Image (tube, rainbow, N blue to C red; front, top):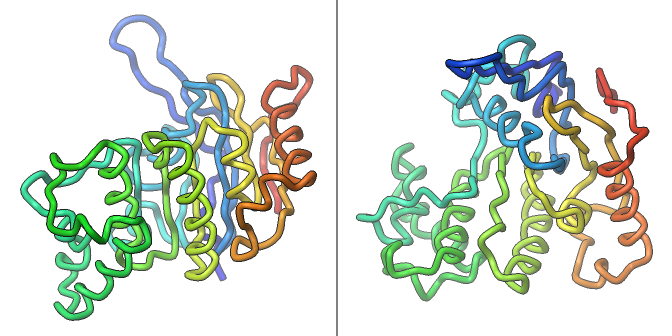
Length: 267
């Protein structure tokens, strides 16, 4: 079976119009297995979101290759092989909460009864079943983001690309959503590439944490987490000594001055 994501020697350079070009990513290579949860963490401006956009074919690398399930990133986008949840919810203001979640199913002509059942399931998952008939401007920012997360799951994608989707949530809701996300990704078998600034969040969610260097973004270190499958991760894990040890390992990788950037990464 093809890797969910394969990135080989990717560099992304942006022209500035005045002065030298800016290299956001430099010689990044990474693979993500089907069903694997991988988080990207690093300082602001290190290229985490840029890398996610390259996987999603919302941008193209200056050099190197990005493939998704053995296809080009462009073909994977056309085939709707992944769901996306970004920092901003991006909801359509004229559609209700239910209609926003239903949108990808509607576009792909899923039968009405199946659409309704899936939307009800997802709104229950994100705790918004009572707001199905509301409009985005009637919701808080955190609630809007939960709608966007539900929409990303709508078509049961084999890959989820998530750019700090929990950043707008209060801490209690954020932790609950983390628990539900690892459960749902484990149950569906979806691979996840998740961008975050939170070390505990990355550790709780992930099979591996990819630690990136300051710009130009490179892979500094890849930390295997080894806390068990997602379906077994509950709130008690946050008090487990193994959890604290993994948080420490990622923190040391993130702040370690002696770490050597990783070139080609092998599982």
